Image 1 (cartoon, rainbow over the protein chains, first blue to last red):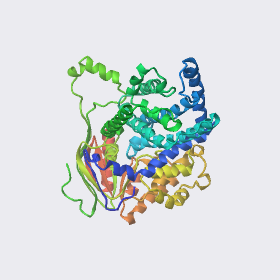
Image 2 (image 1 turned 90 degrees about the horizontal axis):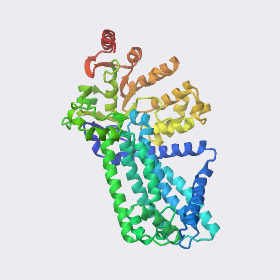
Image 3 (image 1 turned 180 degrees about the vertical axis):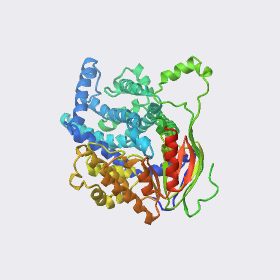
Image 4 (image 1 turned 45 degrees about the vertical axis):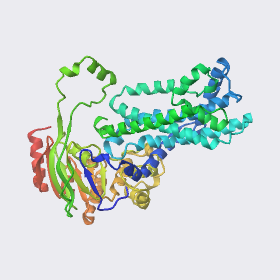
Length: 276
Length: 260
């Protein structure tokens, strides 16, 4: 966007392979405008507005507290069960929403992609930025619920950003994979919600992994999303942390998915406009 | 692949052998299932290799700074492909192009406009999409709104705008880009005559700042009003390059000879 008059641009097969990050940086203002557009659209028209952001986790927390806490009889590890659910939901919903939106954002914006050039990576990134707002509102709600139950945040609370970062990397990687695939194969659209639903059930979102039978626990940790969700809860509420190996495994997987997803996305990005 | 010669100082754009073909292997709306079945039934062995389709044959072109090039051609002549290559929306399969300075392209009026956003918000979003920085939009915001004649509605959502107002505002953002190379596709087909005149005037005002313009339109009068040079494309090949009036004549005769 800011460039000298004498800047030379080369267009040739493969000339788009270099300088991508520099280009994203030049377009950082556009990233901000994308995020702002979606924020305004999401909240201005919605009748319930900001209340909706609170209502969703509140309802889910109520339902899952009954299902997992009462019916299944899982223990909250000495914490009020709704707190176990709500903390898990916040971390999970952030990642799940990012994947859901990030993977659809290319096929939902064909006019942008076929009519104008900008680094396509901005589209899923803008969604991740926007979803931080929902997350912040949710954390405020969690603070209120903690106050209600008289549970003080653990001293590790600021460290909750780390598991969130791991989840964010995994979510971006998954968005890039699924988003690029969806441009090419429309039936990927049907796969994404299924992945998210099973991901939810096999991650310690509405229950603590430490409450699962020991025989199953290590299987649970094999899911790379399990450790960050549990660690997020542990940081905020002081519940037990996942084992170190599970954390390392998650970080390695998140980086792998992000790196391969980025490469895959970059490979297909150049034909998005031809296919859409 | 890489240009060895520099771009001479008087040139804004140089193309050498720039071409685009599709292998037709990538089709819209195929599913994983289709692909799976195709491989599983070994059908891909029997099928002939996908026929190539060349949207743009190798094209050489030099454009001097300040030249205003009109591109004429029937539907499917390769005009859009040519523009999309220059805008980097799609990648060439051969050849290269070298462009000097800031490039701004308007392939569609109001790309990224959102009906629920106010005129003001849309100006900022659209401006950023077209490559303006926040500082530039701030500096030109007043001019953009005044040119579009929508000052009193600027904070209303654009879904409440009349079509004319919407188009005027969208075009106005594009008209206030100050790039070195401006690429405009068929965007004047919308809007009333008065506003169209104003827009053409705006594009022509580029003359004194040595702005290079690439202009695509089916409207030969608009081309005559704007351009200093014309090329005619047919089936992805350059069939004419030169004087505006001769180019228009060539285009009209080719369209009438073979209505595409």
